[in-house]
Length: 171
Image (cartoon, rainbow, N blue to C red; front, side, top):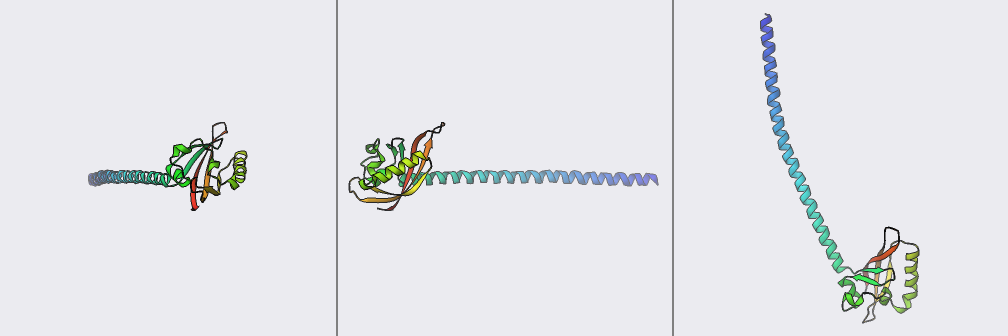
């Protein structure tokens, strides 16, 4: 009788071992399939991120092209502007405006106030976000805009330039 119990025990162990091996192989195959799906999803996520980055870049390029953008040095002289800025303020070309002070775009009666605002910006470095009145160089028409600027400092904290965008309210 002991031999029968030993035989049954060995049979059960063989069946359990075979079942474990079978399930293990299937689990490995399922794991590999799951890993392929995860890898595909990761690739899809990467592709979606790349598309998002490209869309963001295109939108940034678009806004840079249509939104007047300027950079002034610490003397208030224009060192960069895009075509939209030149068109808005009546310059034939952007390069014609380089080196000119930003006050050239300000109506004469607003110059003192603009100088005060600029000095406050330099004395108390922060961004500026406010309404400004500018003047078209040729037609002398007023242009009302929201001006958003950021001050750029070097690694020692010294003001280097002012970067801004104009959002036209009324022209």
